[in-house]
Image (cartoon, rainbow, N blue to C red; front, side):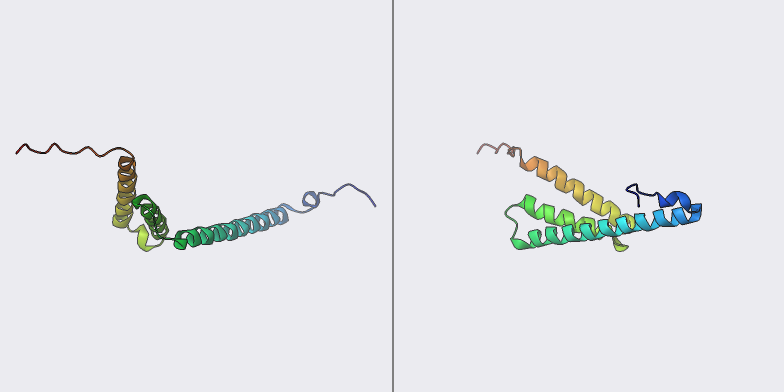
Length: 110
């Protein structure tokens, strides 16, 4: 008996090596998908746990939902893709403006 590991891939044909590599990659992708699904469930549980405390919190929830919708066949429609992109840009622009004090228009003198 030996303590050295034997590299079996070197003893198999090219087709068998490629098939083995494909099975390994597929197993990794499936594991990644399961991990992503669990993380999405955790995120959704967190989003459902309590109502939003600010407009920014609500906008983050809407961003998440829009990204989920964008990944669906209905969300792939070119007009909807443009609308989703525009709304996400609006959220970014309006959220950045929320950090700055609002300038008020001067009131006309009476």
